[in-house]
Image (cartoon, rainbow over all chains, first blue to last red; front, side):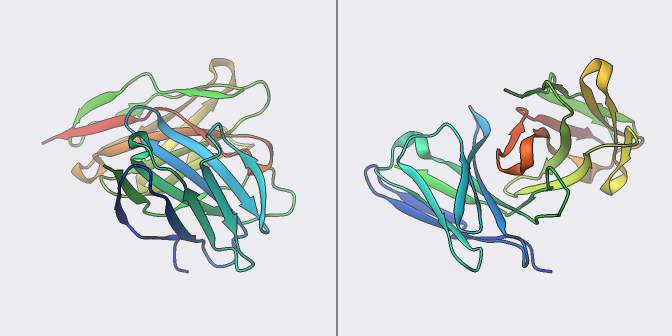
Length: 116
Length: 114
């Protein structure tokens, strides 16, 4: 099975612009989560989608948004970019196992976003 | 809210020596615990997980971890490290259905001396 793929791998944007990142989960996985990784804050949960619905969201401003498509692919969007948005954005997918409370997440390689 | 503490920011170990990375969690109920490894420029790879049952869990690459409820710990061990084990290691706790996302520790940077 192919792993989680993220595109693009690297991105350079200017303050004030917006950006869209894409994530394709492992085939059969219907849950997609997004995380931001920075040297200062570490790994922080952004949001999680399951069957095209956002089930939960971390403590990030409304400039961060996402969506999931019927094929489980997901995109996240950051509007009005700030310098502090420079980070590695990681996508993770997981399957939904009946009777399982928490499912293990498989991570993609990430998208390195640099805001100048 | 849950939290994870990895007390050691950096650890240096000689190749062939044993390794133990510490992880302490804070959560009121039964936690679901994970260890991930991240090599430079890469995403996170799952090493092992604890959901329930046997408190000593085996993972990939020769790693194991032991869940100790009384100490709120989930330490990662390896009997003999290899130079390729140099990486960043993250402990994480998951709660409630997976929709809440994982809460990660700040990570431990492992350096292997020849």
